[in-house]
Amino acid sequence: MKVAVVASPNTLQYTLPSDYHMALAHLVRDNEVYRDFYTTAARFTDHEVILDNGAAEFGSAMHFDALLPIVREVQPTVWVMPDVVKNMIATLWHYNMGLTYKNLPEPFMVVPQGADEQEWGDCLEHMVRHVAFVPGTWIGISKFCLEYTTRVRLLGIVDFYRTDTNIPIGPVHLLGLEDPMELRSIVGLCPWVHGVDTMKPISYGLEQIKLEDYRPGIHGDETDTRSPAPYSFADVCIKHNVEYLKELANDK
Image (cartoon, rainbow, N blue to C red; front, side, top):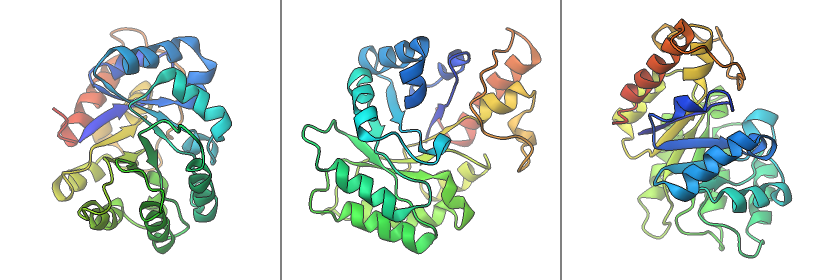
């Protein structure tokens, strides 16, 4: 499983041990250095770049009219279609709306949402069985689902459709990470999962915490804008956390 380290404009250097990246659309829009970094990675290297839609940061994503110009400028490997956290109806509204756009950039990632596991499964089924379903569409599984189930259970639902040759879905990606040890069980049970993104290596490292010492609730997952001094303990912790997470994910 590939690991995308989510960084602020001041910590982009810590993403370079990986060829898998997650760019946040609102930072691409607002910060020139950040925009140039990910546009270059997407256009001129063989790195994979996911362009996120802002739902995890703001509860709901950018609307298509704001998001699509950014997609066309960056030209990411895949972009995340708008969704609304834990809201199946609103997420499906965005999905149905998106499929009406002409010349919609492909591929894109859809993120099933719901207030519980049943709604999440219903949302996924509507998406993949839609008459206008686009072959190769990526599936994203949000960390907010952990409030009512495990992602191993949801991956079991995805696997039902993934192995159906009549529904050619694309790669599966985990959006966000709570407990780093979750990766160990997913790598063992679902080795076909393509990737995961997380702010934790940097957000914890800036607090001089190593991910082996992770405890729920000791630190949030905000996009921290601080820049650690080279060779400081925070710098060492961040670099260590990146390698530790890649080892857990079997990202070689």
